[in-house]
Image (cartoon, rainbow, N blue to C red):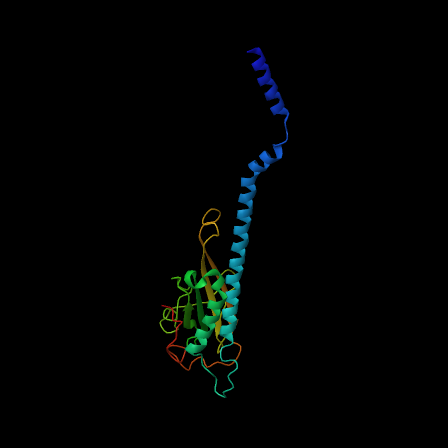
Length: 225
């Protein structure tokens, strides 16, 4: 019995002094922390990239909208057609393919103008792309058509407000996107990104040729429905 106890104590003493597996044990303890930090970094990086892409989409759509009919050499000031607007939205669709924007986002393109009769700012026409059901924060071409007394002072958030000068339209774009985390809701809650952009129309455009719709041609695929 004494000899067995002596052997046991000797084994315990050797075990306490052994350091051969310390690194492996320490790595095993720290691995969950390192993994969690790596996953969180990946999530934050991807979220920032998606938000930047949404911002770039807003700028691209506003820029393209401002250039519609710019190359038209007709001596008569051109109007925007439904086909023109559809081509802009096709570009937005291509830009958003990597983040499945069509299913989770919405682009709203508004023509902000100044009514020459009343001097009011109003949305002459508005077109959309994307299946996300969300409305413009500034109304639409029915609630702000310059004819029903609704006052639209400007468009834009924060201290930066946008107004249209007389005879010139502003292509104002709102882009909404419902972000879903790479790892679900482990690190971030589901959130909705919104980016805005605006460009003055780059060339002469007949703004009053179609007082009701503001867009000619018919059969458009970008109606806000």
